[in-house]
Length: 264
Ligand code: 48H
Image 1: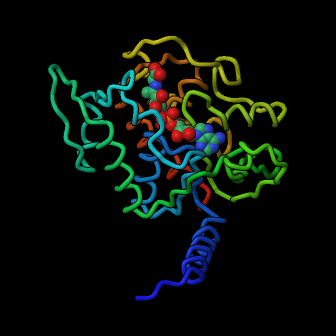
Image 2: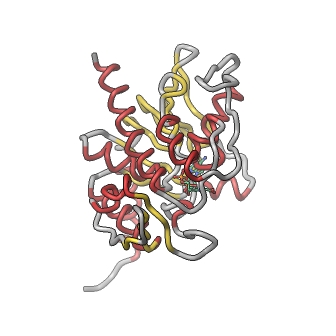
C-alpha cells in the first residue's frame, strides 16, 4: 500500500468534524473526565443517553492515575467494589472491607468501558462557561481548546447544548463556581446558598457525605465527585476512590431522573 499524506489529513479532518458535529446537541455534557465523570458517563451511555465528557487534558482519569502520593494504588471500600468489578478491575482484599486496585489498570479499564458504552470522550477541551436560558436554566457548556488558553490567544469559544450539565471538575468545582459568579442571585441548596468550600481530611465523613452531595444544585446542573464535596463544604478523603465511583453512578441516576422529568 502506497501512503498519501492528503488521504491521512482528509481522514482525520472529516472523521473528527463528523464526530464533533454529532456532539453539538447532547442529553448530558460532563465537564471533567476523572473517576466520577467517567463513571457517570458510562452509566448514562449504558442507559441510552447521548452523553459527552469534555476533558481539558489530553488524557482522562484525573487524580486516579497518581494513587496516593504517587504510589499508583488506590483504595476502594466494600460498597463500591462492584463498580470496578463490572469493568474487570482486579481488586485485592486488604482486610475489613478495604481493597486495593492498580491505578493504571483502574483508569484504563474504566476508560475502555466508558468508550465501549458509547459515551463520547472529548480531550484537550476545556469547559470555560455555561449557556443559560430563561434566566435560570443551564442549557449547555461553552468550550474552547485548552491549548488556546495556554497560548494566551483571544479566540472565542463555542457552545454545546445539553439538557443536563454535570460538574465533575474535582476539587475546583469550576462549573458551580462559574454559575455562582455569573448568575446573580443563583442559590444552591447549601448552608451558604453558594459554594461552601472543601473541608480538611476526614475520610469516613467525606465518603459518606459525597453521596448526599451528589445532586442537582441549580436547574440543569448536577455536581459529582470531589466537586460535590467542595460545593457542600464536606471533607476531603485522601486516596480512597469508592466515593468518587459511587458519586458518579449517583450523578447518572440524578441526570436520568431529570431527563425523564423534562420529557414528561
Ligand atoms: C474540562 C476540567 C475542567 C474544565 C477540571 O480531579 P478529578 O479526578 O475529579 P473527581 O472528582 O472525579 O475525583 C477526585 C479525585 O481524583 C481526588 O482528587 C480525590 C479523591 N481527592 C481526595 C483528596 O483528599 O485530595 O478529575 C477532574 C477532571 C480532571 O481530569 C481535570 O483535568 C478536569 O476534570 N477538569 N475539564 N474543563 N473546566 N476543570
